[in-house]
Length: 63
Image 1 (cartoon, rainbow, N blue to C red):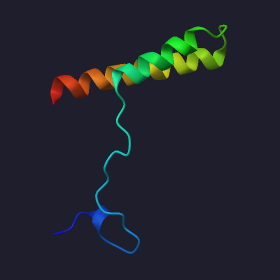
Image 2 (image 1 turned 90 degrees about the vertical axis):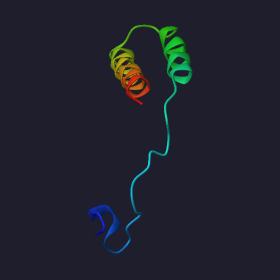
Image 3 (image 1 turned 180 degrees about the vertical axis):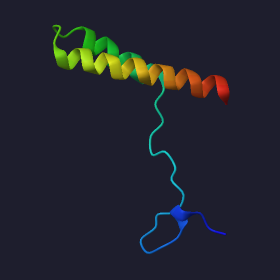
């Protein structure tokens, strides 16, 4: 039996991640971000980076 994502017109099939974040890329982005003056946008980006690093750690330790 096909999964819901594999049925129907225009289905792209099972989803696979198009991009896989790696720790070096995220840390490089964080280093560039830290050179900017403090702002609400920078704070939001740092929060996202923190979540990405936790996600990467979780993916590495579980798999």
